[in-house]
Image 1 (cartoon, rainbow, N blue to C red):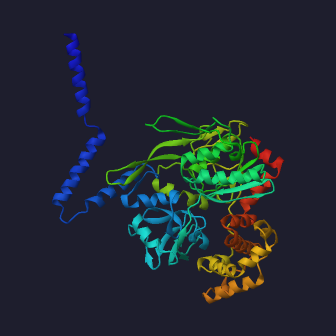
Image 2 (image 1 turned 90 degrees about the vertical axis):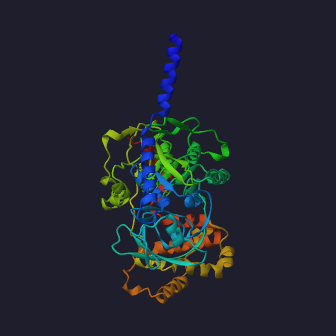
Length: 533
């Protein structure tokens, strides 16, 4: 009899559990009833699908800044940056407070060529105001994408600038590569990575095999402006520098148990675990870039150079909804090997979106001392026990201030009016064979080529023809003149030898890259930065 009562009790308990309404079920029924009321009785015809999508977007905004909804129409477009290609102006963007905010400028694309930057806000497209009109992703794509060779003019709001900046952009086929450049200078290999895409491992394999052939001892890894991508690609990249079975990152959430990602075995031609390593980051280096730089810093494997990274340490999982749309829901946080969470605070959605602007206004881009860390977020690196901090990005071991004075007003006007690159292309079309014959490779070009005075006169004439009042612009300093000519020279190199050649020449005048080479070529300086407490 007792056994029968026990079985009956179990059945009752199971039934109670099955038919109990959880809070999500109760709220879903509430929302469903409201939609039925609207559909049945609302005074006008209501677009139920649009109302639902709006509700989902607003719902996710109540959670965190990185949980996001992507409609069925936009799913394929959202994956292009990491897995495909398209015709357009070459930017990644987010809609923030009804404004198009550029998250990333695609390397080698037309927007980079005219001078658009991460953080710029697009408020006009041609003559149309696009801010404050409740524009959606498809609306942005409709206005900015178009056939290769067509022109679009965008009006930009930029931090530190009072007036709108206008840029004329010629749409083009957008190259989707994660490695912008790799080359060697002496026994140092330099590689610039713009994102962590599905192709990153294969592209980095090619770079490392080249470094092996060139007998490279030390490496500079440039992650500046790298906004992240796939986690597994970051782990693989770290495995090239850190010995196997070492913690790279772990994830943990309230409903997600801790999961550890460790470095893995790799073949000898794909690694450099003993040479000196310098990693470059800046305020636009985020997510997978921070996982990489955080792990390298925590293991005291290399010196981090530049400015404080973005501070995105939240993990999203992509989940399908019934109509083909997806939700990227934040499910956990990233933690570096020392236990740091590099996610910056997000209690205020508005302040979170203003963070980079606030850093600029507070002087953080120019003065290391303006950055304040909470002592409660203090951690120690694993080998040399150096002090590092969590709670807001990765702070470099060697700070390099932002230099906004390098581009003259004339230089900026040439880019905005789309004179700079077309003039260079015309020149290279006429002189490419001659240049390739005279300079056997980009190294020889970098060392021996000087931008001809004849070319500078052609550029000036085109500027005046385009109604740029050159005489009214502030006179360029000698440093700005050199920077302009180096930009011209690097762009010419790119047209002749490819995108990697651009960075080989351009980096000679880049303050952060120059500092990275200075550190990696000086054993005493390198070791003092790596081992300082």
